[in-house]
Amino acid sequence: MPTPSDSASRPITIFDTTLRDGEQSPGASMNLAEKMEIAHALVELGVDVIEAGFPISSSGDFDAVSAIAKEVRGAAICGLARCRDADIDRAWEAVSHAEQPRIHVFLATSAIHREHKLKMSKDDIVKRAVAGVKRAVGYCPNVEFSPEDAVRTETDFLCQVVEQAIAAGATTVNIPDTVGYATPAQMNNVIRILRNRVPNIDKAVISVHCHNDLGMAVANSLVAVEAGAGQVECTINGIGERAGNCSLEEIVMALRTRSDYYHAHTRINTRRLVPTSRLVAGITGIHVQRNKAIVGQNAFAHEAGIHQDGMLKNPTTYEIMRPEDVGFTRSELVLGKHSGRAALADRIQALGYSLNNEQIQRVFNDFKDLADKKKEVYDEDIAVLVEQQMHTFEERWSLVSYDVRSGTGRTPEISLTLREGDREVTTTRQCGDGPVDAVLLALEELTGVTVDCKDFGVHSVTVGQDAQGEVAVQVEYDGRLYRGRGVSTDSLEASALAFLNAINRILALGNGKRNEEKEASRRL
Image 1 (cartoon, rainbow, N blue to C red):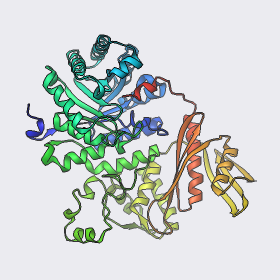
Image 2: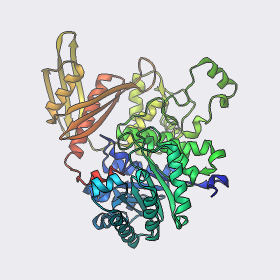
Image 3: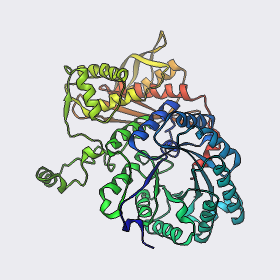
């Protein structure tokens, strides 16, 4: 059978699961406002399907999926459900208000899952899968079915389950590489077998959901497309359970850059890739490594002399994509302390962000403060200011001032003042084994929230001695991970802001406990 890549370019559906699988990255939990912000950004990016969550897993997930379904337009809104009546009913309740609702049902099919997790026979698996799909179709015609751990499922049984799911009404059949075990040759073979041996396969779109445990999620997704898959499930920056998922920006740009080979295209507005990547990184606290393909800081950087010479003569000598096509700009120094609001607004728009007048004014106020501290303000500085305003949430505590005196062989002395509403509280004490530790201990005393710091990282936003330092922390509280982020030209102040940001998240989000059923979605 000839593959679709042998003919004219065909559309590939981009199914984004950043809000479901991506949120399962440790410490990446988001509140409703942050999920809504990402959902709107995904629509602007041009994704076809947004998997907004697993509605039955918790009241928070249900509320988020429901809110997104009611407000977000321009993409199908999908809710995940096991092949259980209660799951499917809850998923429909959440997505029913969507412009284009989809229910995504799943059930494990591999021998290891059948025997050790489900304790079910093959016949039982088929019956439950068919019943689950039929129940979902009774609510909505757009139904996706996933045989969990499909790549490790016996070929004959996988074909049987897929055929029965399509006969029951599934319009998309997703083939998950649940544990990132597949190789490209194996994934290619699985898709080709399904296309050749499942008699009703033409009545459904074949999808793939690849995990990155062996670093082959994008490669496996690409060979699936080559073999005939019409949908790819992916996340912004490749975030997700364990080593993550197929990276949206990489799969999209691979299909675009090598359209001569794959003869396939997406409807993604690629100039929104970098802004969306930055937004998700800022909200989740999971930063993109500098050498990350497509959206990393070094993705279009050239240091070697021979490369620079070639670039000056013709950029295509060492660049197969233009940085502008993914949302980077070529500008260097952009604004200074004498620049006006209109100039800043123009630069914000050029960087790919859409802000309202109130947000622009807040960014402008922060920009003026920053410009007084820095002689040179870069695009990256502005991006940080924008992102701080775009995903703010109501913070109970704010930093007023701090003073730390520290030195070799002495216990730090700290005086720290916080504001809560109309009142200010101050502590002065000797504590900690360094200035950062002293700051955290003082914050814990004033807020009454004691945390265990699991990760602390600081990096320069731009260059130069007056560059802003960005501090990202991850703390544990009551068995859950929370992240915090702070930016300042003073790295110690940035540390205080990051820890305080994490504590405020605990106070804002910490009362809600996730239902243990959330764990079920981690296996897909």
